[in-house]
Amino acid sequence: MQSPRASLRHVTRWPVWAIPPRLLLSVLVVELLAIGLVTADALSLVPVTWTDAQAGLLLCGAAVLHVEAVLGVERIRRGSQESHHVDLNSVWTFAGALLLPPVLASAAVVVIYAYLFARVQRPTGIPAYKQVYSAATVVIAVHAAGVVLLLTAPGQLYGTVGGTFALLLALLAYTVVNTCLVLGVVAMASPNVRILRVLGSGDEVILEIATLSLGALVAAALTTTTPLAVLLVIPPILVLHRTILVKKLQERADTDAKTGLLNSAAWHSQSRSALRAAERSETTAGVLVLDLDHFKIVNDRHGHLAGDEVLRVVANTLREEVRDHDLVGRFGGEEFVVLLSRLADTDQTPEDAAVEVGRIGDRIRRRVRELRVSSSAVDGSDATIEGVTVSVGGAVFPSDGHSLTTLVATADAALYAAKRAGRDTVRVGPDLARSRDESPGGDPLAG
Image (cartoon, rainbow, N blue to C red; front, top):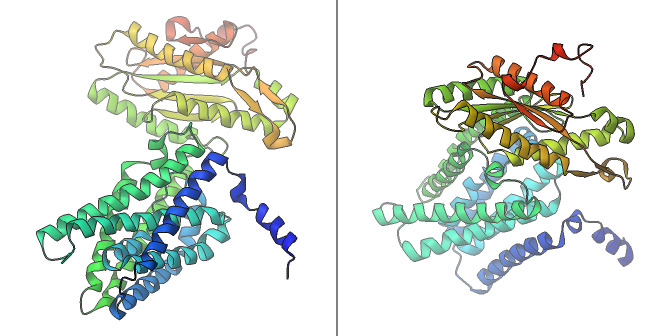
């Protein structure tokens, strides 16, 4: 048995204490609110019938079967998820919110999330405090849905127009409360990350609604004379899990592991599609090719691990400086590429389009020059890497070419013109970009 001092040392080493104090306070407030709601439910002495208890047990049992059926898929999915995680277990928790007394609905959330942590999160190394917070947000969302039902449909939920309207409002309340609590913490933890990027594409919103809709069907099945019909929901849930996994594996295949940007092949494929869309909609677009200046010096002075950290920071800067629908990729080494889609109508003059592309490139150039990258995360030293600069070349669609190959070649030639101009500068278009073969000795300015 551990001594009190050893137990205290163990508690002080919990990962939760490593998060920033402001974020920790917000997490604790949400968790305390959830505890307060459950306590109030327990003290309210609302009668719980045997039918309610049976429904709660059946929901928990179905959730356990669900977790076991998708165990391998979920471990992969949760270990690689970067956007807001659509929790397909809301099938069961939302059904509980519609059908069970609040105290039983909350108890079902606790049971389901405890089992989920033991079987999925813990083996993948996810800290327990994240699962505790997730459970707390779901408990609050369950109560929000319950309040909506109490105010709009205190009687029959199914079989009436009013009940259907109340059901839709409860679904909306559950989704909004849970999503806002999750994204609020994400925004505080990573203030530079765009919420829309974390939330993911519209497909994930549709998936969230579809999952909750299945939860409504589960609740309806439990009100019939054949409650075991809820098990029929598991096969479609399995299909959803595998569909999501295929999508995530595709995203992983398209992603550069070092920076999180699109890899070269994926960038080319998606950029060609974006240019076809620009041609159909008669809008202009731009291509930027960027190369870090003298990056070999960074690797030689600080090591390749520190160099990799610089690449990650630069990649994040690129994402922050362009719009969500622009495409950012890594060509390899210290070279990056950006497709700026839907800049303006094609009646914009080529000169104005080139100025806009150059302005965006110059904004990126200035941001990179201001970067200060600490190497303590990779080698434990107190060194700060600064003075990193980038040369930028640009091209404009359609004035500089209609094909992606031509645009990249023009932007690449402009990049070498920027190198010749002294680096840490921007050049756009073929008029400012002589071919790289004009530089003496072929390519003495690489890097």
